[in-house]
Image (cartoon, rainbow, N blue to C red; front, side, top):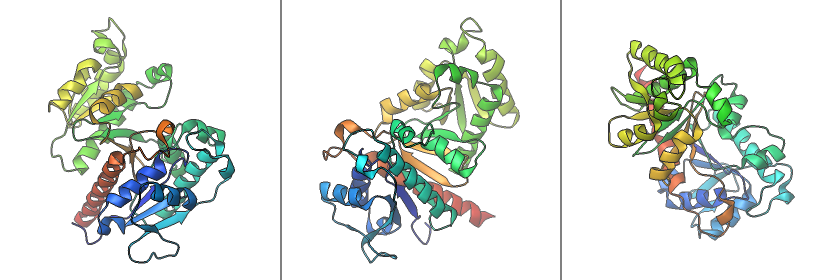
Length: 334
């Protein structure tokens, strides 16, 4: 265990959604040592309202450093705050989410925190605010100047890393290339090694039904995916595939594989959310900073009703702490 708890910045996300509530519920559930290492990046008004909604027995700090028992708060300003309404898409909500991420990045780059955990944003609101990203992953890639990032959904039951994410199906097919598949396998392999798996076992899903059925239902498996798998094996990785997408996740759940490489967004998201909706964590690989997130959206339909659960946020915080401890261990080993 490290001498101090990992320092975490939690971004509030879209204030119209459940982000402020799940943050406050999670903070309420944290033991004092972990709570003291958290900084929330967001709008004080919405966060104080959420704290009252969940009967939070803590206070957001008004000074820096916080007094004993207080939770550090980094306030952001943004245009369009007056447009924000509970459970509605608004440019102000998108502007707030963007401002939170940009501020958290600056704190991370200064070395004041170890990892960022993000509450959900709404992509339509983000675009209305003039920030044309496909979500947190694309935003973080561009803001950090990272050439390639990867979305990994992790849970105790099942984990998946994606070759493509927020693109149309036609684009997902075009992005199924041997180079992209190989890069995704490598990213997943490195991540599992860092987490302490001595010999990770990775399965690669096919793109087409029945993994193409020897070319009867598509050529991507033989032309792109199989060569990537073969190359990964020559690099010493234990990789199997391409396997049919309708069975590979079941095999992984039964313990045959540690990670599945999914070819597109829904191929990975549907099974993960089906079996581990409350505990799955979204992890971004390939960034210069560490980042995890809840694996759910803004849930406008239940926002500000006191109904949102914090299980996913707590899982994201725990995974974030694990990543920090792994990195600290790697640095000590050098």
